[in-house]
Length: 269
Image (tube, rainbow, N blue to C red; front, side, top):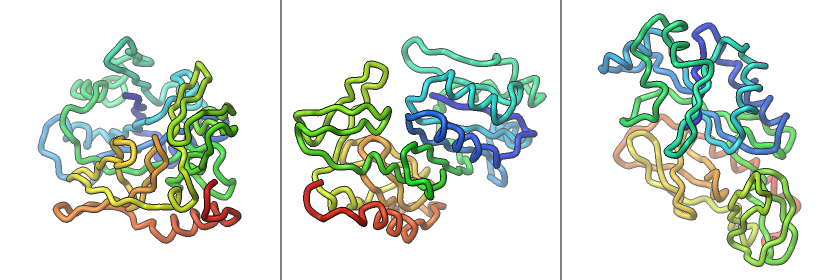
């Protein structure tokens, strides 16, 4: 888990600026999910406290190193206006400045749960920003497509790692691992332009999560069309059981994908 808890005084619009700073200052990609409970019906006391205190959390899905994430946050939000938390099942346990920041900032002692992964789903409002270095300059940080993940490859030909930019060759077409010791990203190149442009339907649960059928990664949906951040597959979220609040971005994505492949043939990449 990587997350940033924002102080109440921070303008939520600065999260967009934070995404832009990350995109412009380094090579790795990320998705930033801004969460809050404004207007939500919640029953648990802990969630009511978070709602009344105007808690906003930014979930970060990325291999970007902690010091890069924190330095960008200091530049955008100010050094004392956020808490950075990173924890995993092994040896990572980072909380800067400290857990007491929550009490000092929100004037309540009932927010310690923000420092741990969620055990039960929470009905957050969700806004997503996409840090995709290398995207066309005209695409802003609300475009849910990483152009680097939609590239094709032939065995034995040079290819650029979509995570760090390292150029290398692989004997395999369908899967290859970046040799950069600081990266190691496992890419899943497409075999053809039609395959890269294809969209697969994914059933979603009540909290708008689904699973990419190409690589089995769990994907959270904010828009009707999202992209798997592991393999690049375009996904359309669907549900016959749940009324989901998803933005219809179908026309936007169709236009952007068409522009991206305007100079490509429909054969092999």
